[in-house]
Image 1 (cartoon, helix red, strand yellow):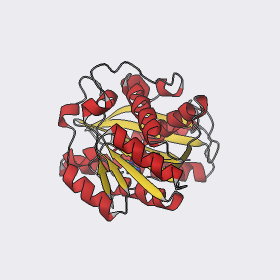
Image 2 (cartoon, rainbow, N blue to C red; image 1 turned 120 degrees about the vertical axis):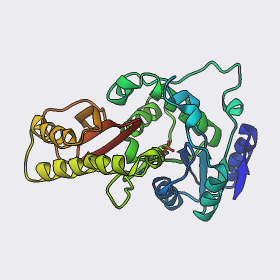
Image 3 (spheres, protein in one colour; image 1 turned 90 degrees about the horizontal axis):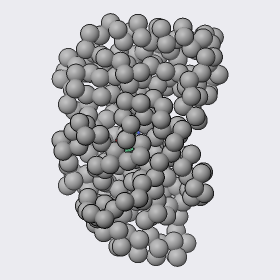
Length: 280
Ligand code: AMP
């Protein structure tokens, strides 16, 4: 596995691989590699001959009060886990390498990214789309592997790739969960044991919603009421939104169309912002 820190070297390596006819899959992460990321890496290995993983906490996708300075950084362990997982190239650019002082170009998607998390985090998706487009331009992968955990991010990136004719296939990997149902996430480590127990209500409410949809309930109002009721039992869970949306546009829907309707939840648990979702 090669460790690469500069844009120029990554571009050279990837150009040489493409010239040799090798297919490339890109996995974009903020580091702190966990089981969710490893599932993306496995999917990437199935989809292409060469796997590139970026380990870059992206300051642009954090709002002013969102604690970027405290985002965990575990670079050595991340590199070791990537190597073990069969990654070919890891990209560890410094912040100034990605965003030199003169940097002044941003990518914004203006419809899907305004909904759901876009309401409470108004600059988040601009940060995501800008870094993603930069990384895609640097690596020029055949395939971009993303997690269903960030379903809105996937929908936004699919739209950007289509709108800008970028010609990259997006592969979406199902949510990886811990044994107690909580979706794996970097921030889970900061939950207290009692907070973690309360957070389980989120995945439990998703399962209940799936059961309702499977038993024929089509009214999204009824399902949202039940989910809200389950979450309200936990005093420390503060709901940011519960919504049932079309999985492509992230627009709210009134009726569940099985396989198309996505239940999206964002909630605070103490100081930890949690998101989760399930297809109904
Ligand atoms: P992050 O490092 O949190 O920015 O996530 C990097 C990529 O890993 C994104 O495509 C996420 O959707 C994906 N990811 C993070 N957690 C999970 C999970 N629990 N299951 C599946 N994919 C995940």
